[in-house]
Image 1: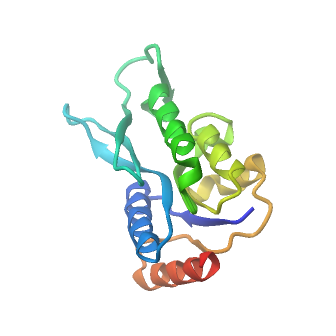
Image 2: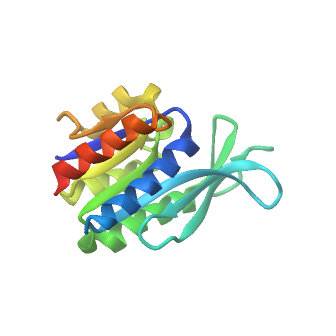
Length: 180
């Protein structure tokens, strides 16, 4: 399976870089699907996460700072309450775009996914299509995620700090050469 890695401990910087990547790949004629996971504040001012479909721009509120125990349809992880419905929505975006995508972007891969939760099903669905997948993940979780999801082959391109512009441009060029 062909895959690339965008690994940065700063999830919002990683998501914005992946959005830039989607634009660059589209400019080269590739059809891009999948999602990024942005750090954002909700209407109440709570920090949290939103998943954004890179193909359609649709959004789903994924999680917020937990101020209580989880309610039905939520999963508490690392002081955040995550919506199980939003994870399912991201998975449906993968399914809906299946025949219309040349390359996938699947962001937000971390602690939950290494235990088979969170975006694990969406990532597995993208991998199952046989199309290249750009995985956005936390560096600290990488080995366990790769092992769990069977990403045994070396990535076709990889970057660990998306805020270093020169390295980012090199990553994009390497990925484009591999995909085109």
